[in-house]
Image (cartoon, rainbow, N blue to C red):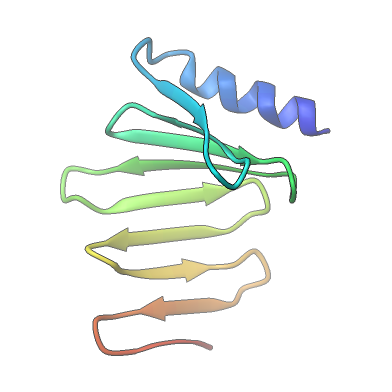
Length: 95
């Protein structure tokens, strides 16, 4: 299963010839071309893909079903179980 997720992640980024991939200090494989990014965490088996739109909002999807929208350190996260969390300049929490 982990190999399939890695292959899927690599296929997503194969369309960008300029994507740069590396393994970070935490052991996660990360690929990035400036506008799109993705990676895989071998410890949890979770893959992710992120895109930045024309307004500078990053939308990140995970293979576990989560979605996050972030900009300037603020954001909203929607978990696969329906849990919503937020972070603003002065507050954070979940409902």
